[in-house]
Image (tube, rainbow, N blue to C red; front, side, top):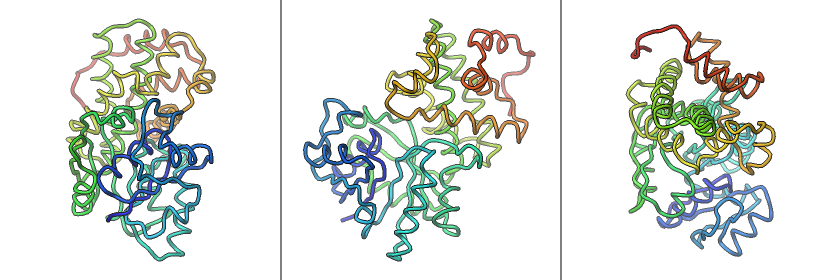
Length: 338
């Protein structure tokens, strides 16, 4: 039996843990709050994140990272981007003690501000400096709420080692989730991270009352920005035509299950960012990611007007309507360019 250690007991981590238990895996779930761990183990629920839902009863949660990682085959990171590095350091300490070298899987969608690094690059810094083949990225159009209800879902597993991606493909897939493999972990990570910024913009437009035309324009031009930044990082252009590009953008920009969209919607209705985040109850990755995107755009002189506008609204005090006017009055140009 494959043992999988899932780090992060939020909505996505709990839903993935239950899915893997459905598949017959031994699943140990690491959380940092005693009340959540006790609820999962006693009632098989996680009501704060997933209401009216029960997890597979074979999922066992713990605050003890050493126990969670013992004899594991796969470590699945499902913690916020801001916590990835600190958790990776703790994992490295435990792996050094045991001598084990499990596969590392990132299901986190973000870019670290300051370092401007993707999650696999943080893994390289902190855990496996010379073993990129042991890192796999899990990303695609997948809300935790829908996965928990066993909605039909398609997700990408990307790695420099297609053998390891295919190995996990066989372990993770079942009759309600289908996994595809990719050899472009960079592109898949950029797609998963930057679409959160575009989703905030989509929510803002909805909150302001704009309709389908505006939504379609935003998503299409947003995909151009995701692709532009992904290529600058070294990703393959065709990756953004797949699940972690167009697919993830569609689901995140059109669903109330997207916390990034909900954040933007409330901003569009006039609420302040600090109040939105305080009431959300979950991490809004796009708010953090847009800072890193801004730094990357400055470094590589990338033209990403939607992302720049969102940064200005969130952190420079710009008025949303003024940013829209500026965007619509930009110098004319061709549609297709890099």
